[in-house]
Image (cartoon, rainbow, N blue to C red; front, top):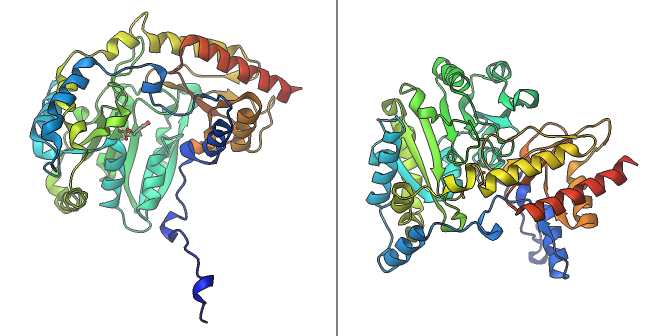
Amino acid sequence: EQTSREDRRFKQSSKLRDVLYDIRGPVLEHAQRMESEGHRILKLNIGNPAPFGFEAPDEILVDMIRNLPNSQGYSDSRGILSARTAVSQYYQTRGIRTIGVDDIYLGNGVSELITLSLNALLNDGDEVLIPAPDYPLWTASVSLAGGTPVHYLTVEEEGWMPDLEDMAAKISPRTKGIVLINPNNPTGAVYPKHVIEDILELARRHNLIVFSDEIYEKILYEDAVHYNTAALADDVLTLTFSGLSKAYRVCGFRAGWMAISGPRQRAADYIEGINMLTNMRLCANVPGQNAIQTALGGYQSINDLILPGGRLLEQRNLAYQLLNEIPGVSVQQAKGAMYLFPRLDPEVYPIKDDEKFALDLLKQQKLLVTHGTGFNWIAPDHFRLVTLPAKQDLRDAIGRIAEFLEVLRA
Ligand code: PLP
């Protein structure tokens, strides 16, 4: 049957059928409409430090500006050598001796490299184990690459630790890899050494790749210690992801990296695929690449924000306390990163659709948070907020949440 030219519609590709990325979804679009109508919205939805007054260290900015005239051309596809050397040396100091400059790929943020690494690996129906809740780009990128995301549970009462039994039970002949997000977004969990070792053992036994997203590795509170997954095993193929967006507060520079370690000879064909996709996108943003060496080698200003008296630590403490004071709300303390993932007791708040919950909160209180199922959480009983706003804004925001919930309770 012929369709006339006028009737032909352009539709999104079927590749996008299962792809969801709700952090920037319909609720945010509604917030943007409200803003264009003149409303002031308190935005606790995106982990973007700069708008909350977290400035990048001067030395990074100065170095980037000085390098700008030399940043006009394409770079090597994997990235400029000085930055890759800095990343390789950084991992040496962290106990990973086997990452050389050629094992490092610079990308337009970690985001590009997540998508690239999965596109290079997955065939239709290949499975990847991803935590629930997760940073949803992982699930979306597995789906986009034609794979099947399979979520393993993390246990709230145990500080959101991965459920190893659930993870093991979900490994199938089609499983290609396990994703770890440590420190975790959205829960703030930081995994102890033995948990990572147990996951590495599963990967070893079933010949799986470990994808370790460590972008929050330097944002740790109190006695939390971060272990780089790749430092705990050199016989498991591991892709480590990190970058400047969070600890150095330059999300906009789009400067991230991926490092491949472990038995690379077994992955020669996969790595060839990664190299091809890396070549096809030519290179990452070169001014951003020029910030990497200075950031890693210079003064680690993030410590001023997370140590006693630091803004991030104090804001986390305040948000934790205020949220737990609301009847029917409970939240695990974040050990790392810059989010809290509170639970709304279903007996008190029988919420059926948490996206609608977020939308109603936005409409009534002019406050933007992200609903928990947007992080592939299994029930409509959580939401995420960022702990980036200054204390008075956090107090205001959580006060609005309490007011909104009081009406729901009534
Ligand atoms: N991984 C996690 C866990 C994140 O939370 C984010 C951003 O929020 C990213 C990756 C993406 O970061 P980038 O700015 O490097 O693309």
